[in-house]
Image (tube, rainbow, N blue to C red; front, top):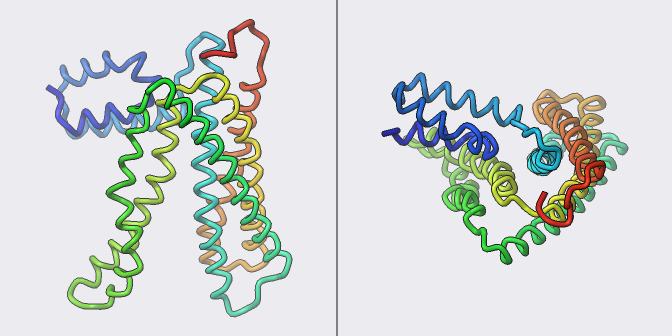
Length: 277
């Protein structure tokens, strides 16, 4: 039997990988044993499988996987940019010198762009939810349950940080006040991406999600430009820690949204794109 750690490591692989190699990999783990080194290798392999997804030979299915990967990645980059904006604003407000007017305007434009992108994402989520209500595939939404245990840490974080100076538990209270919200934010970024992959939406909904990802990518890019301007013109050391990942997220959003849109608009092969791909 495979222990819990190895089973969770196997579940960490993308659905497309598990469909093709899941049984073989599980049998291999049963034969070799679920040692800590084996579990570590499984987790590393899962990370590689997400970074380099396995694409089948069929053109239609390749386009489906490409669009799913694009939608999931675009969501993660939007979350990263959304989290970065208030942090950059806070850092700049604490600096002894005033923020240039151009930088402040860019940050305001980026903020409104991110809110607009959030509305676009909400429309896509409602379309996916409506389709799920028709086909009854509610188990695909199960990863969202992970939000339940992490949400309280976000809500009580201000209270924990208030009491972080009280001995003898100041260190642990302060750590929970910081790491708890971080765990919630990471869960918010990751679990919806997993849901999109597991739902296997129809081609109509998937194309809508992929094409709307282009607008979201431009919003993320606007945020990256604004944060980059803040880094160049103000150059506070703390802002650099936030700005560089935001610029990287902008690049990733543009690349993945472009690939997803290309897959959504591809009509070379006579495939029934009105139903499932």
